[in-house]
Length: 77
Image (cartoon, rainbow, N blue to C red; front, side, top):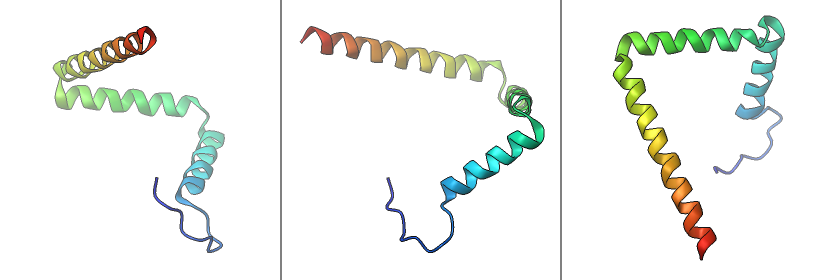
C-alpha cells in the first residue's frame, strides 16, 4: 500500500469516498446502488454480449477450483 502523505489538514481520498458514498446512500437510499448496478450490467451485456459473462463466469469458477485445491494441499501437509 502506498505511504500516506503527512497530514496536511485535508482528508484522504478514502475518507472523501466514504463520505460521498454515505451522502448518496442517505439521499437516494440503498436501492439506488442496486439500480445503477443493474443498468451497468445491462450496458455491458449490450456492448459485449452474453459470451462475455460466460467467459468471466468460467474464469471465476476456475479460480475457485484452484483455491479449493490449494486449500486441500495445505491441510494435507
